[in-house]
Image (cartoon, rainbow, N blue to C red):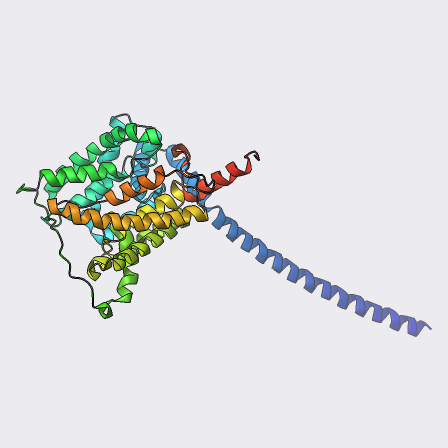
Length: 398
């Protein structure tokens, strides 16, 4: 009996040891799974918390000295051309401008700096200055004056008119704001359009500031559709985005899209849609293929599609369709203005975008899904949609 009891005790010990080993293996696997889950959660939280980090970085900049803040204002001014209030996106866009042409980029920086500085000295709204709203028109002025100059790169005398016209931009912005606020509308790029037209018309025969003359185009219809290059059409999508800054390099346009997707994926999506619709509009009117390839049909459509598609309207499927319609309208209006204004030797700049978007924002509708945000509430499409959904949630049922 003692021997059998000893054998039973040994078997029980062996079974208990095996069971303990099994438990330890399971616990190790569970610990490994927990660690992997925690790592995944940390990575996801880091990605989701990225916008908050950008916001905290912006708040940190506000507490720094005036030099850091001035740099931040100018970077935001560069990005605000595409309705983006993000200094990091401004750095990326600046890199794309330098890739396109360092001289153009320098003129854009000078225009942004002196436009912002002029707004500070004129005592304009400090929050608007801090978000770059007094810098983007100066940026475009500097870029386009360099683009239209006939003296090539590094003609240093060009910086003088860039300085003068960029300093005028905040004056024009303030004056136009006094008028546009009656309809709760932004000034868009109207100051840039006025400043560039004024400069080009005034210096047309100036031997010290020669410019590339703009002449009416007499295109021959594209009956040879077999010559249409599909890869070049696809290339024209980033080129159309780049043409907002006057750039025809597809790599620069691609860099601009990266800057947009970092700040707002919705803005980036509508930029691509707007550029694509501009291409289709050009094809529908039998425009010269090279003009389409160069992105000249797309630049105004890009801005119009972004503005209506979530920036000044809360994004719904109805306003998304409205943005598509606005992009097409911009393209056709741009061609009409180009054929008309080129007779007097002036470019259309972003007049088609400004006029089209103002028309679409002045539109009235009884459809509650087409909601135009108060200008004071406009931030970015994602936040605008959140504001709209919260507002609808708190509405009392009729």
